Image (cartoon, rainbow, N blue to C red; front, side, top):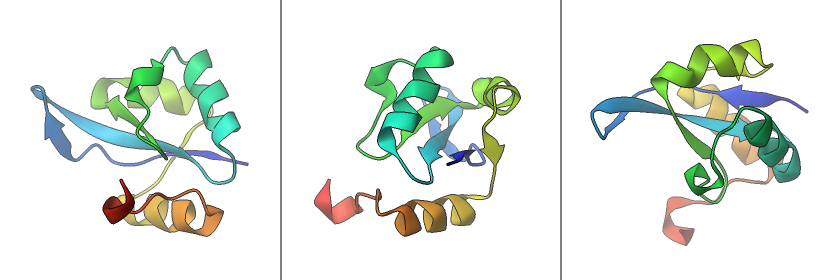
Length: 87
């Protein structure tokens, strides 16, 4: 199981945001987010939204940096993806 974080590209609240996902298990994702002090309110059904200034710390804690396309493919392959139309 791997935690993945993509490139921060989504602007909101004066900063850019990335997505943090698990390639296999939501419990693993929640545990990792908890260890990294990411609040549960940042969870959006299949990913956490994380601000760009947190990326280096997440990688230091064990997340793997990937492109947005790689993250999406891994999320789909895991079966955890919630499609936009299902949100």
